[in-house]
Length: 107
Image (tube, rainbow, N blue to C red; front, side):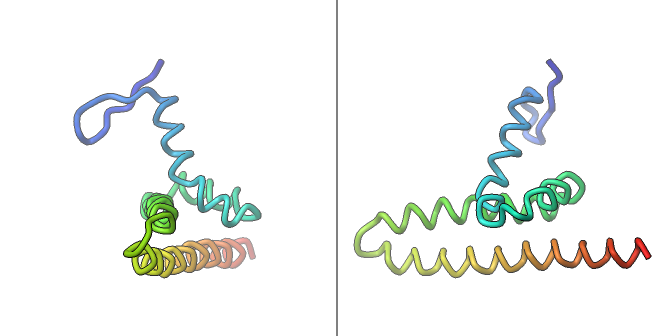
């Protein structure tokens, strides 16, 4: 089985790396299922976009955690909810920008 060498010097099987990539976009695809193909294509060619999707995955996990925590959880949950909304807007902006650039170049 092929391996991928991460920057930390270890090795990861290609199938495990693919699984990790799928996990990085699971939440954003769940949020925008109608844009799944666009998200997958953009992640495959744009490391910055993929990073935004990974940030979204982490932020939604943190949001769910803080929604379960009593007392301080409300404040933290509100912070993460705002961050999640910002990331959603950034993802849509990037997708819409690439869609409009693609249609302009197709003319």
